Amino acid sequence: MGLDELKISRAIIERFFHKLTEYLETDVAIVGAGPSGLMAAYKLAKEGFKVAVFERRMSIGGGIWGGGMMFNEIVVQEEGARLLKEIGVKIHQWNGQPYYTADAVEVACLLAAKALEAGAKIFNLIMVEDVMVREERVVGLVLNWTATEMSGLHVDPLALRAKYVVEATGHETAVLNVMQKKLGAKLKTETGLVIGEKSMWAEVAETLTVNYTQEVYPGVFVTGMAANATFGAYRMGPIFGGMLLSGERVAQLIAERLKKEI
Image 1 (spheres, rainbow, N blue to C red):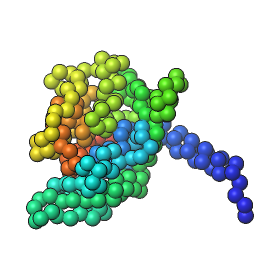
Image 2 (image 1 turned 180 degrees about the vertical axis):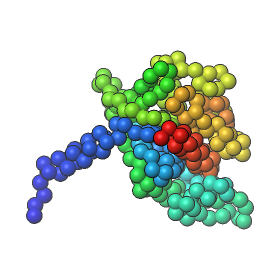
Image 3 (image 1 turned 60 degrees about the vertical axis):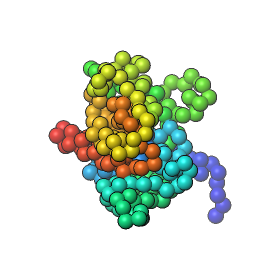
Image 4 (image 1 turned 135 degrees about the vertical axis):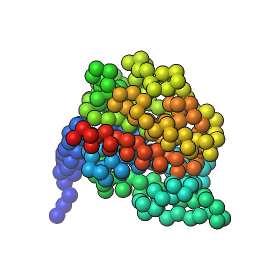
């Protein structure tokens, strides 16, 4: 039987738009498919919630792929190792000390696979250019193709409704920056603004990224490096335990809210 190019095109178009339409209303919309965003997606979807992840780049995994300075190994501490074991990543204890290494490619692939297997949907090459607001609460996202931004085209976006939004775009805090610019949003930080990350201090940063994982504006939670950048904490470099634990934490916080609302 010969292949028909038109049928191939129809199959792709029909399936994609079925998927996108199905997720125009969702429990949780996660912006950024890095380690914390993917872990949050995995944990929330595993609880049975409807979760969509939006990544502006073609690849997902955020900073995991490059490891440290393009050496594709990452380090986690013991609690981070627990989460990697849970998703099936092989870990190696380093010199009998509480440092565990893992293959960066394996981590990125299995995190994404586990999130999808649990029921989350990941949409790449889509950016968030705005948020939907009702009565000073974020209730959804405004989406466009990344290519429209890159090419400078003026193309109107489409909207998605979500009960909760997770800001997981890392250092850039893209969602919060849009909210500050367009809404004048006052965040739950000392200044009411995104404070910006400090220089590297891994020990402190690993703890603070979990501590600062919280709701910063009605309907919007921060996780991972976006949490550190929002509250003015330190960066941690290629140790990813705090990022994974932050993703787990934000999932716990949102799941508690969603269960109360049922």
